[in-house]
Length: 343
Image (spheres, rainbow, N blue to C red):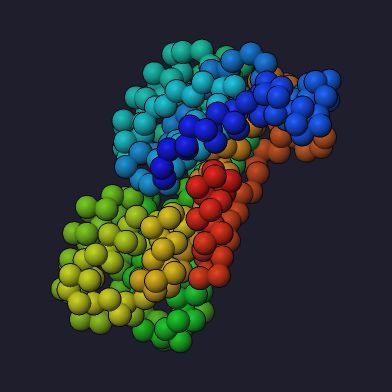
């Protein structure tokens, strides 16, 4: 993702704060109405401090999420500080321990692995800090009082892409799944979605499910081995697009590009890969919506006092943030929405 052009960024910031009086006058909006609109929009009048952490900025989904959080943070008057997980449960735990030693208006966390961050997160919750879980579980929702979880239905995502792959190979052949980190609840659910579909096809043989841990260099090594071991592979499912495209480079180097590949996240390079036929399918895990939504939920909790629950003026404990399966028809629109941090 590229930086937002300064002129558009400044205009949006002014509009979000309803400080651009001349623009509002041109639009026929009175100062009184503008003030009311500002209240409805939920923007904080006073600057807020928020801390974010996702699993590792090496992952393009996470890097895009950081940009989205910072973008929406500027619109909502939130100063975002980042604590990188560095694709390591140990390193992320150290980062969250440091986060918990400071005071924040709210925090948002994507855990590298479930149940690894419970102690420092509970410390922040007990201190009265709203904690928004993003994309994956910090701990089971009935065991930790996070304000909300914003996450897609990862099992459905895995199932949807796997079904496209099964349709493409007519329900028979040699298939692999390259998983993410095994402790990541989203990866666990994507694997369940894959298995749920594959078991319907008795003529499909799954020959490998080695985890790539979201690391493209590790995935390249895995796929060097797989291509040497298996002279025929018909389809391969990957838990994210970065891993899928890293494997495709290895396939291309070995002249094995007939393998049908599918991923998850629908990042811009994967959208292009679907459009030009290198990938059969991917599905959008809406990083911008999730990270931007965490900003809005955090502001609602910190400023408006919205509590966890169902009903008007409350934030649901689990907000499902599904995105579409990518096709050649909808890919260009998804590119545009991602460029504007909308999905």
